[in-house]
Length: 237
Image 1 (tube, rainbow, N blue to C red):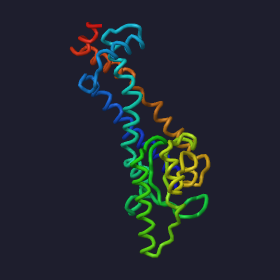
Image 2: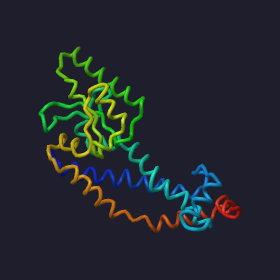
Image 3: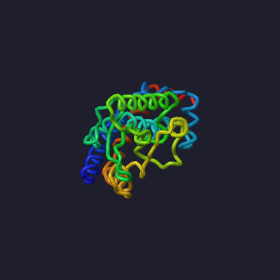
Image 4: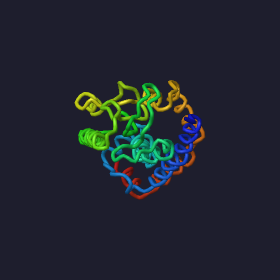
């Protein structure tokens, strides 16, 4: 397994898919219609953040949560399939409901894995869906006289620590007895390198240091602040 190739592909994915999407989504936010603006809380948050409710302060109060929070989470979550194909394409599976297949480097058994981006990215319905997919795989394996043990059907969570896992993930293990491997444990099993997860984080961090959008972000703040709707909210504080 070429671990260096995975690291390089991860860097390219982060730069070309994640960072570029983040920038493109941010540049759209010069239009107030991109926000569901509550005029009362917008003024409050602007004052809370900067001590005044000028148009630029209101723009910042609207932009910061979107740009630094929900927008990033959404891009990473929706990009998981592209991450799978671009970074882990050599492990791709043709089995319905399975994202990747690989030989677990810690126990030597083939694992059939559904990939998830982070420790809080599934809900109650997803638990049932995942368990249903895994049950179908077991039935198919029996039909085709293949050995697929219960513990070889897994959920791989790309980042985080076991203590971070939501209760929905824990139900997959507790109620259905399918393993969930997260962060370092997942990448160790995939690559055989205990330190690979740290190397992956470092590789992505190196891309992040190249991404300075501060000047352009200031331009977005000014453009949003200059719109009639934002000025109107500011004038009616």
